[in-house]
Length: 283
Ligand code: NAP
Image (cartoon, rainbow, N blue to C red; front, side, top):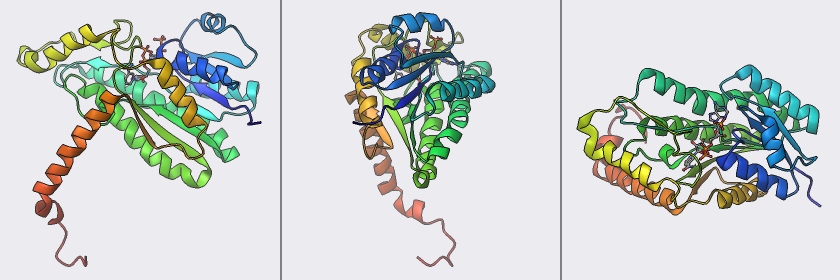
């Protein structure tokens, strides 16, 4: 019999976080589901099982992150899988978003993720085991019109996770970055998505088109969050989990397109790229 894992999931009130919590519970594991408000609502929604603990956590509050991790340890004795899922999007041209909007998005998607990671890692390092799963985005793999600011927060998540995977390797801890395309959660709803109020007409053909597309595709996105949650449980149980997991064909296609263009630039500019070393460097 495999040992029950203990999950610590941020942003579990709805969307991916909720589905991952359900899937982990269904697999027989223990779950610490964290929410910004109304913990009793989620507890009753999940049927109040013994292997569930719902804890208040706004990831932008580092003190709260440490308290939540401490409460998780008190209740279940360990944390095996941390899912840094909490986050939200901004739909805006890079130029349109205000300084405040940009900083707030980084505060939740990047600094929040770091707050929680710093709070949980000491327990994983002590045990010399664990898995940090960061929910990034296809926007963290390639720049997309209208999603430049949001995507840049996820590019940060990519860089952090890739480095963590290498730093954790000798400690028996894994790190995975998950890059979903468009999935049918509340991500595009007004309750989640920020649309910049400052709209510049010159971006009508590019960002304007994306704004219309986002409205049209909401609730019709190709990705199924229940299937994504099953995939997360699968990689948490894998002997050698991946460092990257693009989710959905749309995500994979956009990444492949980026790689082709990237490789083309390398081919075209090879001599310039490799011609910058000092002449005394021995190749
Ligand atoms: P969602 O349905 O809008 O859920 C977002 C979750 O994040 C909610 O539980 C929300 O809590 C929580 N959250 C936001 N800011 C928070 C904060 N400061 N502290 C704690 N919780 C916070 O969207 P989702 O699609 O499930 O999004 C989950 C993750 O997937 C996000 O990181 C998002 O960037 C990423 N993602 C989603 C898609 C997609 O198409 N759905 C694609 C790529 C990546 P409240 O209920 O309290 O607001």
